[in-house]
Image (cartoon, rainbow, N blue to C red):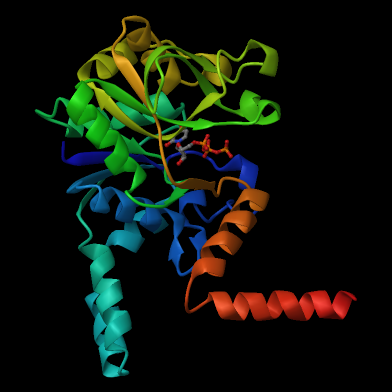
Length: 288
Ligand code: UTP
């Protein structure tokens, strides 16, 4: 498996007005945009090719991954060789291709848009760039390893407190874990109807049978084609597992989650952390 599909064609409405012109996937977290963290995780997991699904008006994503020799030369000329190297690295992380989703018709539709570019691969990974992973081994690598053993579709599962479970897709599972057999998937259930406390997070390995199901999946709520509907069909046939992964997944899809994630990332950064802590101490002192 060499390809990761990165759906980035959504509207980002929960992060407006910041995301009116700036794609949600391009909001900076620490020193780089969210989507770059995602691609770095994929590359660290062994992926060699990324298909990014963009939308009209989201050209900044394409621009970020395009080589920029002029900028590199300018930086080198100014004695910033290290920064020039990091800029070059963005363009050479992996082979990046783009497909456009003309309308935001849902995550399942975004994955469908990428399918024509996936030839001869029995499985692909999918990474949602508005969830950042922190930990080791990389989350996508944990799923790919499970796929190597199980040979089927793999979901990323995280235990979720009851009061938050209705925000997520939730898996009905069998087994002891950390690798579970998934028998069903319920999208955003009421807390009392949730089949478990294992919520689906933004990483997947999808096999051919999910693509086949996706092609005939009818639009659900809000006219969107839901990826979980196609996964449910395959899960009911017994061909899906879920991994309760190790490590932390941090959301950047809303203003408050982005703030919390940014603080977590910068806090642990050896260069940026001290300045953040100093500023927080200063603010606390000025309040007291
Ligand atoms: P989200 O539902 O979190 O993103 O989808 P959204 O729809 O952009 O955000 P809100 O709910 O309006 O605030 C997770 C990922 O799937 C992509 C998004 O770009 C995001 O990276 N996505 C979503 C698509 O590519 N196409 C879609 O039609 C919907």
